[in-house]
Length: 241
Image (cartoon, rainbow, N blue to C red; front, side, top):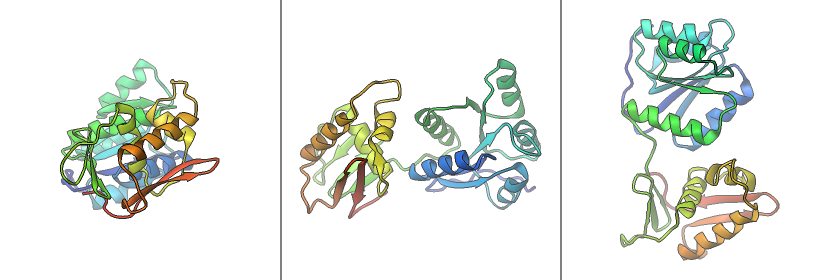
């Protein structure tokens, strides 16, 4: 395998190696929604052609892979000079397993079942260490959301006064725009799974967001109410910058 180092790109590149098809596709779709360029494979053998043809900023490796396991695969990649960051996923949380992962060359280790918010935070930290980061600025209509500054700006540069939760909700809707988002998924992502919140709280916050953004039918974006489900944000003009 040719030795490669990650090349800075607009969209960080991630390779997922996970044999569970449902987990692999779910993780792939969530990471793509976050703005990453994602490739996936069910085994080390299937991942090899991808690694030979391009460099990745981050590899997400399941430990219990068919054929060559994640530990062995990671060690071999390091021996071949692959410099990508590595996040290992496993159902085992014993200290010996964690040490084994780090000794194989992984930078981080996450046990299953994991919380999506925690995984996304770890992924973001690792791709930042690799020299890239997911898109930090999103435009929607006449507004700009700056994730780095945690600010929403109008076209004239003035800032929209949002609470922390309002900002997190807007950022989540924008990252997952054009997707139907159930209230439960929104609550887990924005408020956290450990927080007990009435699902209708989402409705109140969406209503407040629209008021603070002065939403009208000509605003260039809309947050559709999906009766009995949740919400879907659609940006009619503007996008990631």
